[in-house]
Image 1: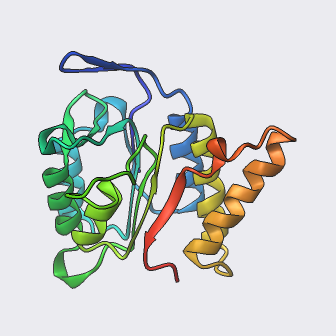
Image 2: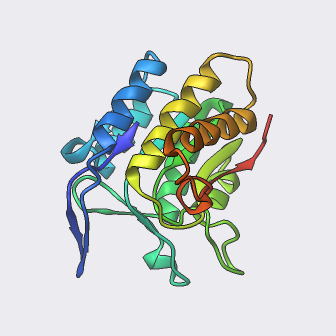
Length: 201
């Protein structure tokens, strides 16, 4: 579980804080015993690579800012130290996490527009995760609030861990829970951004 909750500067762009990230990560850790987290200052490229060298992880969860652009160098996730985690680096980390023929089961990217793409990179970072060998990815099609994505992520993993829902069903159930809590304010723009790409079963 990797996340950045603090405001960070990346080049000439400043990314706002994501105050719900620590709670999102904590709830997932409680749901998935044996998970490992790197948050804020601990979430950097060196520590991520080290963690993947030590353990095979079936799930990689990124709760941070992200950006998609037609310029390959401007497609990235943001680490807790303000580093750019580019497409090619992310692809390498996913392949590294799948060493020994153990496939990464799920990459979840609760960051802005990580499922958006163009004619050169279909489905953005989500498509890249699949191309790198992950069985499935969950990512966002447009900018979303971190409170809603934190709620969906928490419920998604809770439903998934119960064993009676496929990943697609778990995501659907998590989105329905958000709709219920919004009490009449559940416009699709708030809950429908996260999509599942790859193997739905």
